[in-house]
Length: 473
Ligand code: NAD
Image (cartoon, rainbow, N blue to C red; front, side, top):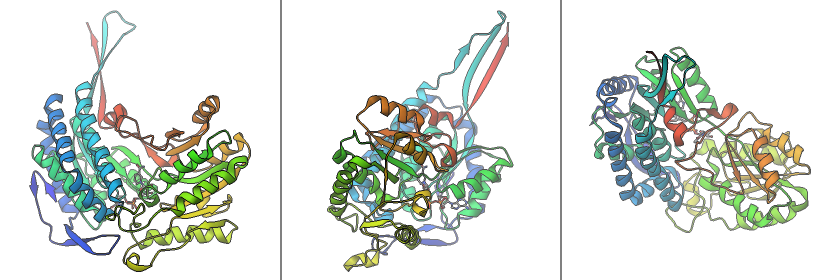
């Protein structure tokens, strides 16, 4: 644990295992509620001086954190592959994406402009400035174990807030590596604090009810996000939530079917499907359906499953056995209700794979609305195809979800692209684009996919209060 600028041990530790091999790769401190409270106290004390630093001082620390993360990119990527499972190349890319948040918010810190607003009264002046909210409590998931931390910490520090963070229990070593960088970059004592733990609930509760915490930012499941938001409401804390998704991937008949299938296979199987922006329902217009499914089948058949440390592998393990069971349950349900299984559909246990949590890249066709996979997030390597006929029909089906994070559309018709972009109730729309994310672009969902945005100018505003001054002359 890292509290008030010091690395601390807890009374107990927990082991961290490699999901590809089940080998123990390290241990982490099993912090408790008292540790969370100590971390909040440290962050609160540090806020008094940190909020008075200039944007240029905070920017310099974030720039150093960026350089250190880039210098350590390979080591961090290897650690991530061993702890979380994604292939080394994908982990390397994630570290780059994570570092971008330090860089972008180092720059944005200096552009924290206010406003002067004209008044209807000649003797009145309105002035607006953006001030840090105070202590920020952050909870992050395991699937993107480094970038989900920097996406919260970088804007919070840029805004002038101090932070206490609890990373996911599956990936505390990646979190520790990020905090080593923040320490080496020169963050003053107490400005960033981290408590690792095997028992998240008491720490989450302390984050939500402690009056010194002014803002809660959470990335994870919709279920836990709702619980935390409910708790945080008692003290009216500011809340940002990045939750689950159920992305539609829509392919119209004027699209290049092969190009769209290539895009679908790349984005669907990223991180073995364990991404909140992973396409969960692939809608394909009937006249190009066969060509699309043919190309998708060939591409999926070529995917190699195994340890991410073998550079030939494109698909790593799922996080644990619970995840495997959830995926299998959705696949079995779909097959029982009439879906066609084209590829995969089972766990992989041949050879070394039996040591890890591997699931075969799966393609299901003719998904119908009564199947679990039509309504539930999968978080696994299953591509589910649904043929459709009409544009209006697919808009209704795509929007037929309680989620609203990412959506993808393939069409070469500019008018249709604009119409669909406007009609979809999702926070992020990729139009012929499978990677609509960047530190510079607002990331977040509508409906039950969350509240608020991360990255971009919006991402810094999440950690600020807007203060109006009305001056009578
Ligand atoms: P999860 O909600 O179980 O865990 C996320 C984090 O919350 C972890 O740090 C965990 O320790 C903590 N947590 C769990 N229960 C808690 C409690 N009672 N109190 C306080 N903290 C608690 O989810 P997960 O299984 O780690 O992640 C998968 C989910 O996260 C998926 O649904 C996915 O869509 C979502 N996710 C969303 C985004 C996004 O940006 N929108 C990004 C990544 C993951």
